[in-house]
Image (cartoon, rainbow, N blue to C red; front, top):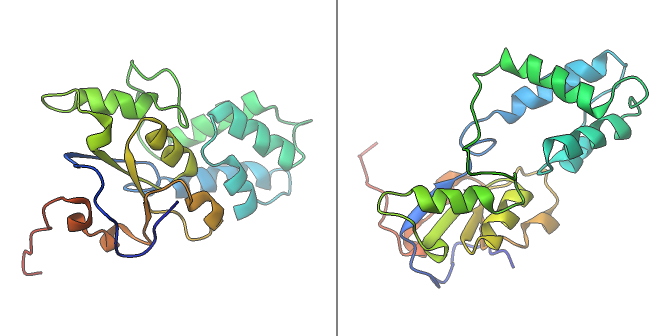
Length: 191
């Protein structure tokens, strides 16, 4: 059950931390939204939060199917065509990156988190010693399934029922208190 209060009992010895990038540290979600809005505008349709929530955390092809079916454009644009078009548009907005070769499945598969545990200096690190920061429900489930603890920093519009699997839920990364997890405090640089 998620704990959104400021107190978390330190159950595990956390030695390593993993941050989700897309949507948590880097605001790339706006690019996906922008591109999907442009695609739908051609069909006089709009992209809203409820559709985005249904697509979150799914494999690309599954999210694409939701996109074309929920918007009623599947007769004009297949899920596969949507992915090709979206990818071309996204490439113009941010640079490409490759998946690590040892990751066969995306979230909610635990592949990515287990690969990260192996890549730490001196690794592999026992997953129970890793704290993950995530914004997506599928990422929370993947990290939990990998045996890791999770701090969730969700979009405030996300239904709170998706928070339950997280060990702690925060409104912002700035609300994180490392001592609650047995980690050293942040340095005070006087700023």
